[in-house]
Length: 323
Image (tube, rainbow, N blue to C red):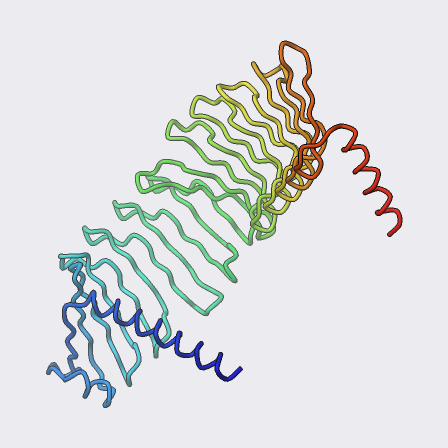
């Protein structure tokens, strides 16, 4: 046991060293600058825990300025855009604890902001390139509590209050990408949109999982599929379409094929029927050729004769009853 532990610690050390080497390989230079403005050697900086800044220049052209007090981050950590003096992000720390993050576009306008009140409670904001507000949200335990959502003309077009309401999701040019419906702090429905504003999908949710019916549509409005879910797993019948015509029906249970699978031509005529049990072919496999059925049999994914299928099924029923 002691030998295994030593090997594990050795591997952890090698992995950590590898990560550090990779990180340092991306660094061109580091400066350690005392609060009073003079440079300090790295070893002295680390041993004395001076207040001041560490300026890191990376190979990709980014410059990172970190502010320290007593050997821990305290103040701003600023990251530039590659090969630019424009600020990409500012992280604010208090005694080593991250309190806020602001990101900026290349023109210097703020894009997003996250204010962290505690590890489980934070606020987020987002802006359009023009500087007008786009999103204001409050989260607790990663659950949306309150939110306000704005269109490109600075009008509030949706809101969530005390965990209930509608959330509009837009891109940076104001196009509507999706709508989410919340009830009692839980998302219950989501609709997404194509660039031409037609519906791309609708889905029902429970506890942040797909739970209910999900439908997908082509940009022309024709159906692509209708699927049913139970706690994020396919359950029940799913139907699939080509050019608006049904071509496949599959029955699922616990995300596995379980029941009949039917293939269609022209959305009406069944050309093949396959039976599944727990993700394995089990039962008849019927192919219709000029209206005449041609049947083969499978037992637990193995091709058998009809007689063998009946005998094996009877044996299984017998052993099940005996238990």
